[in-house]
Length: 67
Image (cartoon, rainbow, N blue to C red; front, side, top):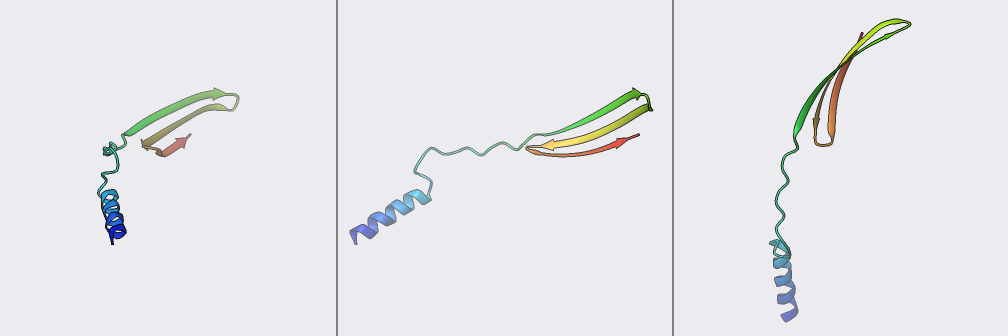
């Protein structure tokens, strides 16, 4: 019976998070946007392109157009 009580107390202690320092929640990832434009001149003429991208944490979504 004593073993069951000790095991239950340890289980309760671990379940409530009292086994270490509290960990603060992480801040929300910052969302950034970027616009880039390129213009190039070569033997085949003039090239132009535009790209818009949004980044949040480790995810990036981008859309580009080339002319």
